[in-house]
Image (cartoon, rainbow, N blue to C red):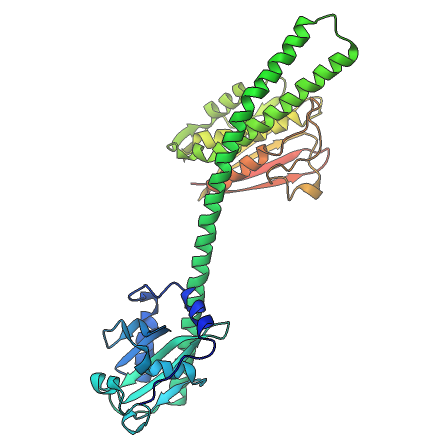
Length: 398
């Protein structure tokens, strides 16, 4: 009996096969339904899915036989993947010169074989879907078409499995890099805080110790230094807040009374001059209070700062939906240009507009809001027109 030799593209084929990460798996239950169906449609006692790798024929799923591998050099499936045929068929092994002396024929009483090569999108034959019988056989056209269709479905499952692995690897790498970035942001932010505090203190000392002796230019320089220090502090605090936001979700969920919750928000932001309307009845059950507090604080603080109306108005409503908690925060502020609304939740993305105190935002607050809302299984949207205020609507999964 002549043994089949590896093809010219064997190295590339083996590399492609390894990407599916199935070679170390004894069996793959995902394929059992297909082997069972193949045996049933073809009326065969044995069916299996194989992957041919190096010296062995690895069986991923078997019907009617209990095996995990066979030697490649005597495998019917090796011939099948090298045949370039739609279906490689041996109607009677006893009359076939290639297989009549094959040890598999005697050991497993194989007299009929039909195998469909599993061709991946790159064109590599990875293995086969095959059926065996103990008597000479022929397949009908319908059986052949069905076997080919099932083989295509196996390739689809293999591709889906590979994509899931790639996605999982990418997710793990992203989590790793995010953790590294978080650690870097923490270290840098903490390292900057101390010298920044010193700069702020020295600036105030210079102003106080030299009161009445400083020129207008010197005072302007000190003003600029204090303003720059304040801006840098906001960036540092915002960056730390952004990367620590996820830790707010580590705390236990609780029930909150809406009236008490929004009164606390009012006290924290020292809302005195603005008209601040909010629900005074109702309970929000089983929610991360700390995370919700951070979300609302950021949105209401922006509504206060970016408002030039004679009377600032902020209206908050709550709706208890079937699967979500929904909050709406509406203001009569300066509004947000529609051209940048799609990017407004990106980290460090700002409107380019200064607040009522002449300061420009850091672009961290809304990014923190979006991050928390997403982590809590919800979504956030914005409706706004220049000069007509903004409405933020966000949902949180129950």
